[in-house]
Length: 187
Image 1 (cartoon, rainbow, N blue to C red):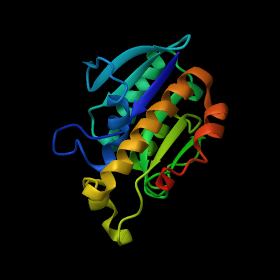
Image 2: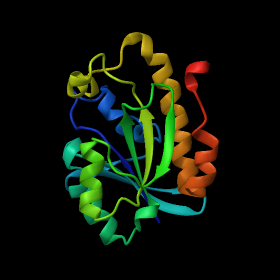
Image 3: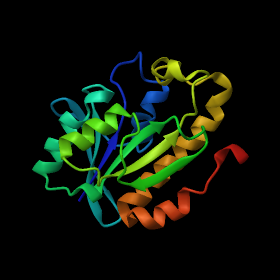
Image 4: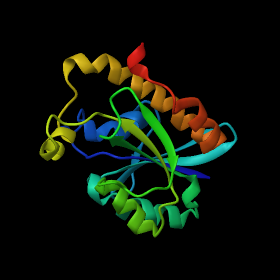
């Protein structure tokens, strides 16, 4: 069993912001999400693997409050949890699958690690680029993508969806080999 967590903030004012790429990727799967407590949850099967797709509604920085209880209830080990989130340290057009690692300032990832008591879960880091000035980070992640970025964002979301499905069925290493070297800015 697996758990895929899309990071994001609830509400229409955040729907198209950089911070919501995790939600956007899960939306691409076309699954019927239903409200369960402080989350939207969908069940699905990928290949022979059964699992859950989760969009926490606690706001980005508190997602661990939803992820950890669900993982414990269904006895999903950390290495079968994939957190899909935005990443300022990668340019728009790049993504990276990785196992573990500290949050590097991502408070949503920190919340999940602290609630699970481990950093062994997997991550799909989706590049959103850096703000013009470092002190503008919070405003930047809560801003929508610019019009000229939208075609690239669409390609990234489609490839990220493929990466999620690959991870659910085949695990981290074969999918990291397939997706980590891609640079979607090149066409």
